[in-house]
Length: 98
Image (cartoon, one colour):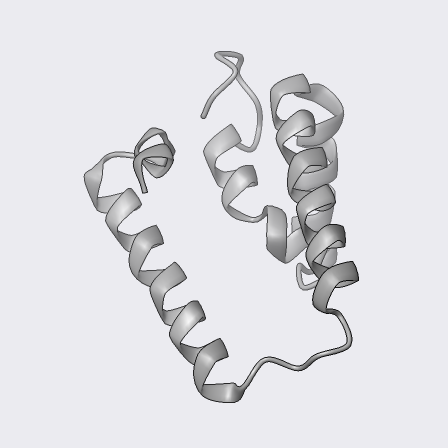
């Protein structure tokens, strides 16, 4: 996804780091880049808001239960696999078909 405007940090890069940002796992520089981009880019801010709402809903629905280690590893492995496929196929626009 891209809004069509030039940003110091591209839209697809910001959106790829949304969950890392939401989880507080980015360093200060990365957080600053994401925050600055979200301040400038309405489409990415809306996408961020959607991802934040999904994360809160999932946390509310199953926040008390710890996922089994093997399930967590499988899910994370599949996410990495899909991200690799998206990158090799030409970008985030292909993510919608996954």
